Length: 224
Picture 1 (tube, one colour):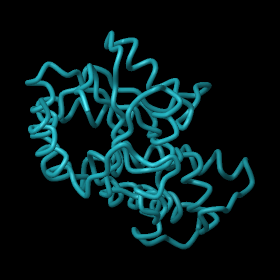
Picture 2 (cartoon, helix red, strand yellow):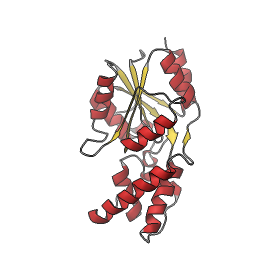
Picture 3 (cartoon, helix red, strand yellow):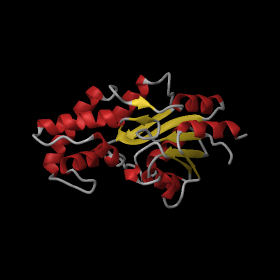
Picture 4 (cartoon, one colour):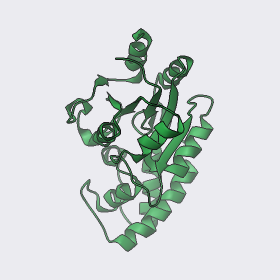
């Protein structure tokens, strides 16, 4: 497999474990609304489809649950404010993430983030870690713009990086579908969430699957 011009990374569950801070923000929001708090492991299973859907899941206590839109809109605003305050408290970069990005960039490969996390939070996180996880482009959820699995974020990253070939690295089926729609190779990692399902079982299957970023790094180093 030939190395690409650009490697696009999902963020939550791929480069970082953000569940502890997401759970903190959700529980602060739920407490304000007089609702029962939720366990971090429940949040881990709900992440991946954007913050608005995450808020519905937290309010309903179910991955398929939905609540009144007025309630959800109020809760969403509260959640976003709380998450802005706490998003760097306990979130961590996965082991070997920094070495992986450094290896790619040393080889002249551009790097980008395409995430369903709201773009303002994604940019804030990546700016805070600019020396550890340098990115050429950071794209996230924006009002009026499609989320993954729509390929538009990936195509925009390719356009902005002047890349004719790209890999998408992610932990969920939405990443896989976005990659296929954008004509990108999909690399699955088992670090993340994917609602409890093995990323290897995604249809169509990933081009490559790695248990963690270290094994992906070692494989990259072996590719000519």
